[in-house]
Image 1 (cartoon, rainbow, N blue to C red):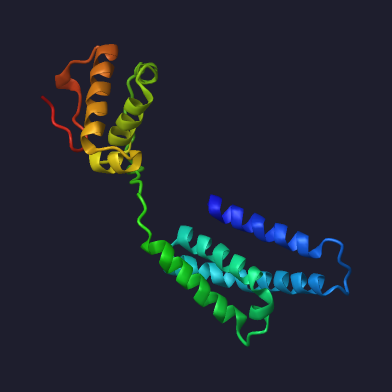
Image 2 (image 1 turned 120 degrees about the horizontal axis):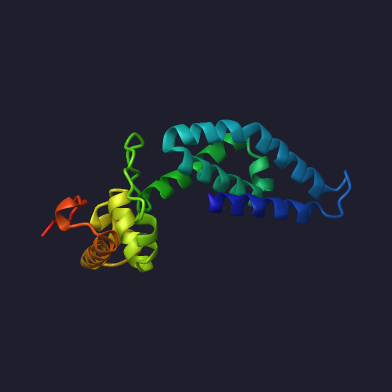
Length: 191
């Protein structure tokens, strides 16, 4: 979403720069008005179509990219017979490119599962190092595999396992819990 906001801010800034000091007879002013009207007319349909085809995140981002492109090339695109059709192709290609980029997907825990939390867990978690805390929360709280945690943190799987094991040892000591009462998370073995 940050990229979309930046793109929209860029386009608005460009419009202000083109229009600044312009009267209603100024060609730059007329050009920006025609682009604004084009966006009002085309954006809802383009966004809906792209979101339906590629998902809301990619669809919205591709729409913003397409309109940024359209603004940069507006005199040429405006003269086309079907500028909305051309923009659809630009946006679709942007969405396909975005879909092909490898991204680390963050699995979300099932919403119906209500965790049972030890009252002293919050304070015990604060005493862990940041890396240990992040590894434990991702592996146990979000039920990620060690490989997924390693990918997101940019470290090896064995490093994540070391962080998790050390964190669990510290948590057990702080909370006074024996090993037999702690559940084993994804990819971990109890000794």
